Length: 257
Image (cartoon, rainbow, N blue to C red; front, top):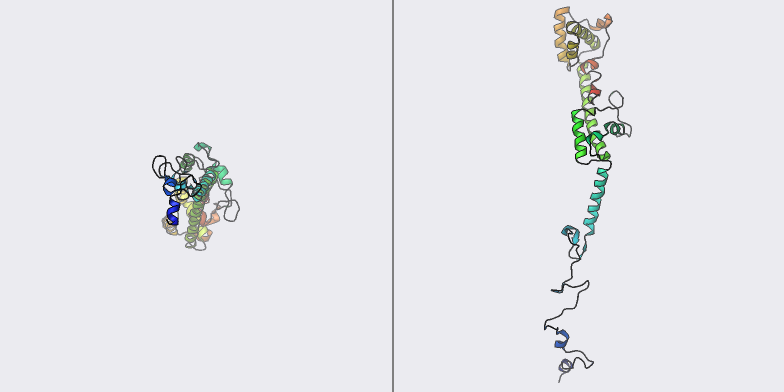
């Protein structure tokens, strides 16, 4: 008898190695597989899943049978950003404090934002545009930081537009020559004498040198050539060309004042 045959025939209770058949025999005649580390499934002996009920697959690492920490950390970061985004949110549009938001605005240099005249910026909270913005702030639960960011973008855009208009007016003013202020005053007086305040309103909307010169030609047919540099001697208040081609209150009007 070989050694292998002898070992196979040793009874299970004889103190030696159990017979192969005896070692694997189950009470129901099946085959029992040793439990794997971490527990087994009652059906097939595979590692039991510990994924909490309702946990999305994206946050569970099935291979390691553990939480997907990278995704959970990412989710936590999103939650923190949302908390910051909604901090100070209001549920009523009328509670949006535009005056307070503007007062806290800072430029790229860290200084408070001011208009083109160097004065504090003012917003008309009753304007349709800002009323619509307030509704959006409340509807989406935007906090003060988000509100301030959007208001700053709005104000910056308005200031950029006003600056561009001012530069355009200066360019047009240069086309009228060195005696432009006197010419403008003469035309202003003529327009007022012919049409009063209504005509002055139209005069204030002049935006190009060509428009001015057209009205000046009409004036010359009625009163003679433009008086030039001596035009301001009649006591009328003189204005610079930029103030006429681009009225002084226009930059502030852009902010709803």
